[in-house]
Length: 155
Image (cartoon, rainbow, N blue to C red; front, side, top):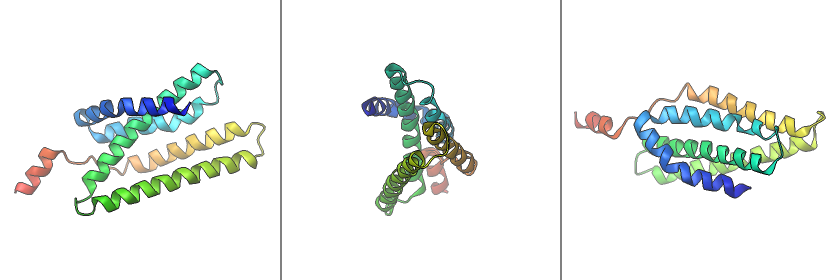
């Protein structure tokens, strides 16, 4: 099941990248962030295998857009001398939060008061992601294009 997500993700990297170049990185971040935020809710509707392939494909498409644009923002926000350090911090933080989220989901499954713990876990995941999108997306500014950046430095 996980391979469907990976194939979709790697297939959509170039599509999201060109869409980001044409329409702006912030728009891609908004679209992919919202798609990725609601994707946990799709798990509660069915356990049919082909439906779950569809869910994983949607998650891969959304995750690809988020990864492309967040990494683009990271590259635009750092100077080349410190870039490797910041990429390392980004990767470490991303991995730590992925493990923390998984552990929190596992804890929620084992210590629940609801009749269906999966509803709780997927609902909490969706709410947390929507909250993070709402909190951070309003604070993000569009990174300058290469042409704009060269104009600023040439003056």
